[in-house]
Every structure is written in structure tokens, then in C-alpha cells.
Amino acid sequence: MKKIAIIGAGISGLYLANLLERNKTFKYQIFEKKNSIDLTDGYGIQLSVNSIKLLHKVGFNKLNTSNLYFPKKVNFFNARDLKKICDIDLSKFNDQNNFYTTLKRSNLIEFLLSGIPKDKLLFNCDLVDIQNKNRISLCFRNNEIKEFDYLVASDGIYSKTKQILFKKEGLPKYFNAIALRGNIRNFENFDISLYLGPNFHFVIYPINQNKEFNFISIIRKELNQEEVLNKNLFNDDIFIANLLNQISSKSDLNLVNQVEKIRCFPIFVSKKFQIPPSNNIFLTGDAFYSFPPSFAQGASQSIEGANDLFNDLDNNSSNYYKKRILRTKQINFRSKLNHFAFHLSNPFNVFFRNIFLKNLCKNKNFLENYLGKIYNN
Image (cartoon, rainbow, N blue to C red; front, top):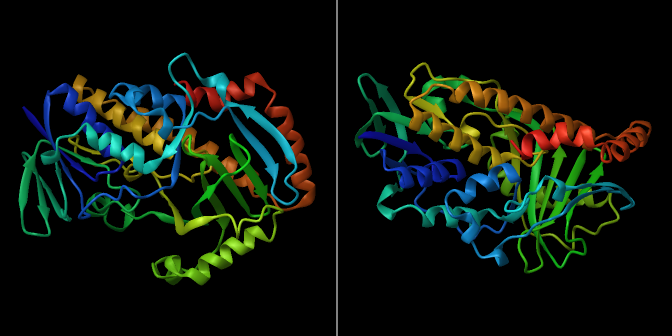
């Protein structure tokens, strides 16, 4: 029986483990660098129908629906005056059993963990080297060495595995933008509300049936290399407050008094596609490729990628990277286009953008090509 090492206990690695647990063709072990998994994180994620179908394969449909929300629309607003521009009907991409879903990321992680025996997940495992001869030898900081037939790196955008394999080329690049995440209670709109402003946008959406809402804002912000690498900067209360004030001052929505538990993250993206030279090493999730978050497909693509990889291993085929690169290019293009369009600052450009949005949101062919090809694939 072939043995698989999974590096990283994020969405991609845990979903892959759930598929392997139900298959029994392979033995697997998950290695996590941290000493535990934080299940108190209340920040939200969006899951489109493409990933919900895959989650149902591992029992997601049995999850208590009070921990989920099923938004029907994305409503576009001008951040300044809060006037509605247009909306997209998300329910058109649903089917009888699968719905566009929002929830807390921690609830999804908790669900995925519930399908994995505790002895399959090892903590405090800091990978320091990889040797690949007849089999893959993984060397950890505690001097322990373990051998496997396959290695799956799902350890995120800052992937240690990728840095070992590709050295400096494995490092991501700063996207000249920062994400602010927080929570809001008792917001008025129970669909997804997307507010567009000059050099920023923010999104508010419900994450369960208990009137809890997720807040995320993407703000253009040029930083020098020293600032980008300064982790203390992104934990500094004054720096975070200044960013929130920056967007709140350009919106009639009083964010300063509404957003709670706010945190700050620099946005990094992948420089290029990188494929390990060995056919028994795989990258998945953000470790494979990370794109801007402006298309809300990060979690869904982590699940999709893990499913593609499982099928590749199960069928002993070699289509994983070819399929993933094609799919990721589609997502990356849409993410960067959204980021550009959402952040327009020139009033003339904003005026015509809003006209285009109003027309495109009613165009069935555009919606099917831009969203349907992703959501229903």
C-alpha cells in the first residue's frame, strides 16, 4: 500500500485526507507545523457550488444548517454614498442539492477534522529538508526522518515545502495590497454586499443563521520590503486603525464603530507556476498557486485542487498539473480583473464602470461565461 505525506492541515490538505480516508487505497499522514489548529477564528469564507458538490462527497450535507448561510445575491454599492449599482443573482447557479454557501472558516476546518482519525494528524512537525531517491525522505526539525511514496504540499502561500524545493523562487510576491478582516453583528443586508471605492473595496456577508457577518476589505498599499517583512507592523493597533479609518472616511457606512475583532494581513500572490521535477511530489491549494482574493475562490479552489489530485492518484494518471494550471489561469484572470475594476478612482472611469456593471449583471451569456464556467464546473 502506497504511503502519502500531507504537509499542512489547511482546507486543501484536510479535504484530501477525507477522500483518502474513504478510499483506503493509500495510507496517509498529515504533518502540521503549528502545535494546534485554532477553531476560535470567526472569520468567514464563501463556497460556490463547484466546491459544495465536492464537500457533499465527504458528508458536508449533514452539517447543521444553523452554521451556514445561503446568500441569493451579490449586491454592488458605491462605498461613498451607499447607492446600489446592480446585483447578481447567485441562485441561478444553484441546483437542487447544492447552494452557494457562506460560513466561518473554523466551522469548515472543524468539519473536515471530524472525518480524520486523530492519529493521522501530527503537530509540531517543522519540515527542514526533502530527499527524493527511491522514496521520499522527509527530515523534520526534531531530527526525525520519515519515508513516503508521495508528498503533497498543502502548507499555504508561505509553503515551506515549496521553499525547500525551489529555494528563493518558491517565495511569493507582495501584491501591493492589504486585507482587513473582522466581524459585524446585525447588519441590515442578508445577502453579499460589495462596496466599491477608490483604491479599495470591502465585502460584508452573513456567515450563519445567527446574524453574524464577515467583513473583509482589500486596500491598495505600497510597502517597502522591510515593511512587508515586518510582522509586528500588521499586528500594530495604530496601523490597523489607520487603515480602517482610511476606508471608513471614504464611505457613508460607519465601519469604525461596527467592525469588531479586526485583523490585518499583507496579500501575497504566486510569481509563476512551479512544478516539481519528480512525479511523486504535488503542490495543492495556495502552495500550488495563490491569486488575489477578489473573486472569492480561494477556499473553493483548495477543495477542487485536492479533489483533482485525489482522482489523479486514484486513477494512476498524470493530468493533475495540466488541469490545475488551466483552471488556475481562469481564476487568476478573473481575480485580477475584479481587483482592477473594484478599485477604480477616476470619477470618469467609475461612471462607465458602473454602467458596464449594470449591463453585464443582466447579460446571461456573460454571467454564464464569467461565473457559470467556474461555479458549475
